[in-house]
Image 1 (cartoon, rainbow, N blue to C red):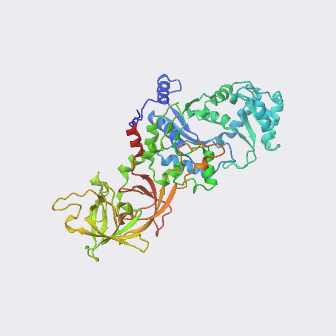
Image 2: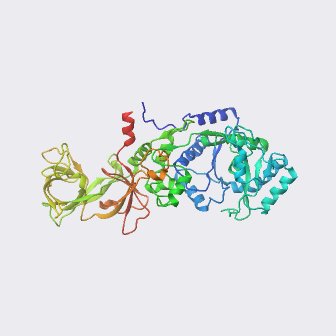
Image 3: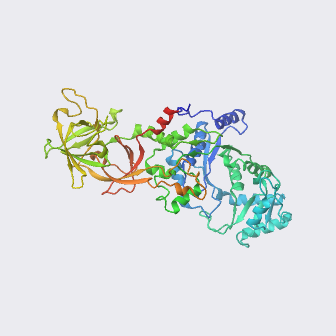
Amino acid sequence: MTTLPEVPATTGKDFIRALIEQDLATGRKGNTLHTRFPPEPNGYLHLGHAKSICLNFGVAKEYNGLCNLRFDDTNPLKESQEYVDSIREDVQWLGFDWADREYYASDYFETLYALAEKLIGMGKAYVDSLTAEEIRAYRGNLTVPGKESPYRTRSVEENLDLFRRMRAGEFADGQHVLRAKIDMASPNLVMRDPALYRIRRTTHHRTGDTWCIYPMYDYTHCISDSLEGITHSFCTLEFVNNRALYDWVLETLDLYRSEQTEFARLSITRTVLSKRKLIQLVEEGHVKGWDDPRMPTLSGMRRRGVPPEALRDFCARIGISRAENEVEFSMLEFCIREALNHTAPRGMAVLDPIKVVVENYPEDQEEWFDLPLAPDAPEKGVRRVPFSRELYIERDDFMEIPAKKFHRLAPGQEVRLRCAYYITCKDVQKDAQGNITALICTYDPESRGGGTPDNRKVKGTLHWVSARHAKPVEVRLYDHLFLQDNPEDVEEGKTFLDVLNPDSLRVVTGYTDASILGMTPGERVQFERIGYFCVDKDSTDGTMVLNRTATLKDTWAKIVAKS
């Protein structure tokens, strides 16, 4: 039976925390835990990165350690300062700080080069002149051992000469690579003489054109960890085979041994977390940029109105393990609602309006009602909401021929307007096509504030806005970006793009009560009976734009109840 877990305590003993505590107790890795979050600046961070951020910065805080922010910027073809800036912003927004410990792999380019020459001098690396296609063919596969390159027996002197000339820019891109000399028959394909350096004439966002050769990620990462004194290097399970190379490089060069430990990456329904696919969504115009609120990027989550504490709660709930599992997107929505329920002020909005004319209410009269900003926390104060003769209610809150157990507005049926008056529908006005244009109602003046002297019971309570005071707002209603739980699981000949949800964004014009109109971009509100919304950065002095952050429907709780 599936049950909704309690939020784990920050000292919960998953296998990584158990390892840390054991190492600290024995002093095996010293007395201070030191981790790092090492993003490649070739895209915007997403929900999977949030899990890694919360782990690395989180355990450092829990165990009085340190956590570095290091940009693994070894591929200038795909990297940019834009991505660096966005990563900094996302990590800080999520609630973490790296103090003065911001590093770049490019900080170590000279050291990495010198260590590569050391490997050559030890006979542990060589310059290979095979083409990329030939290298792939020589590597073999899981059942066929690799073949040694004919250039593998070059002398140390020849390799050093070629490598230095590679750095000097004498050769074309792809003409040579530097490879580690390990074992072409290894059952681990990663260890079959992996590439350490390649020629790439591309301007680097930090070093400019100083370099025309760049180190490979697997060679760079472990050395960067070592140079920074990282005690525990946490990464996802797809790097489990790379751990052998990580260890080989540090052992061979006799460097401080950081230790790599793998955990299961985040997999979440109704989305993709592949950076390549996210880039494709952006570049092909399927979404409106990296911060499109439908994207699983942290910038998209932020623009949608998701509070950072909701993501931290989500990461705590899913926990850390070695077992691959798929998390329901509804669990993230649950965490969002849990956070916003305690922080978002209440308001009223009508997204599909139908006009109500209260015929016995004076035309020139208006009055103001005090509605609580947070019904469960009266100390947070009230909002002032105007009432007038003409109102808007949701079209779904009226039914001309009411179904059984329909307790909202219908001809002859009385309902309560939230914190205002009881009204009864007397007539329905329609246009020539038969569309309803207005509901003619009467109100009970004795019911002000939601009660009557005779204490009669009314089952339906509706939200509303005063037509005289309301202003139109653009409301963007976001839904899942994909139509199925696993967008990768498509029939042959199709791709994840074929299951994009054509209705993932619906834009409507709604009306809000006057208390909302002063909100600024980034502020959030719960519209009663509708959902949670956030003011978008596209808002102007003339038009407010609202993004739906989450509905009020608690899907995750229903999943748990049925389990």
